[in-house]
Image (cartoon, rainbow, N blue to C red; front, side, top):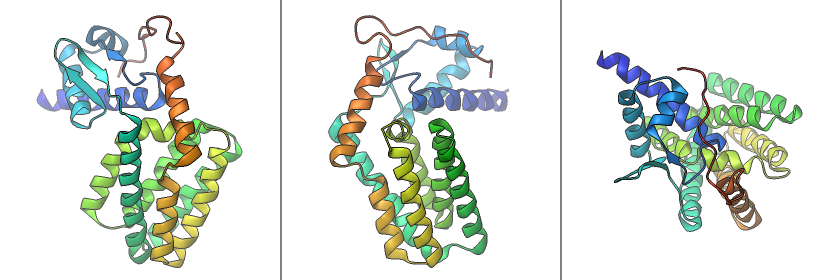
Amino acid sequence: MNTKSGTRSEKLREAIEENIATGAFPPGMHLDETELAQKFGVSRTPLREALIQLSSMGIVALRPRRGAVVAEVTPQRLLEMFEVMAELEAMCGRLGARRMSDADHAALVEAHKACEAAKLSADADAYYHQNELFHYAIYAGSHSGFLIEQTTAMHRRLRPYRRLQLRVRNRLSTSFTEHGGIVEALLAGDAELASERLRSHILVQGERFTDLLASLANLRDGPSNGNGPRPALHPSTVI
């Protein structure tokens, strides 16, 4: 029974996390348990377990008398998180350049090709998915279990914001070009160059950070443009 509950709560966590990453559940949105239970066709018990899991990841905030709310971060906090993310990925690149096997190289190149296909189709959502797999291939190539855990956790915390970046004009094409430089450095075994290029790829500074904040502001406003309540959750596929 506990195993089934755990499996159901894990699937719920993934579904809610995906809704947050895509902007369907924007920052600051109240996650009503009754509406969520109806949307996903589940009971309150696995739903509460999923929300607790998301809270432990920092993606959802559980507040007394208000319940679950999609976490919001200040611009300064967001900048700091991207700075840490950049250093973690730079470390993955440095280690990966030294430790990647032929199989790791093949997986990286395959992921890069998948990103190219998504870019050519101008499908931002497909590119986002393939982009995640590309970065995960780099994490795996570090062959450091603890680093992979920490980097993956931070990546998941920043998923909504990394996705938003790809919707900024020309960012998708620029991202793919940067990927090419990263792949080149990793295949050449150049640890410092791989580290430098990954750090630069992740950091959001200047205009990029301003564009990200503007996109985030639009996401927070939502369809109501700030003049009314956010739309209710609509029924979806049962998990």
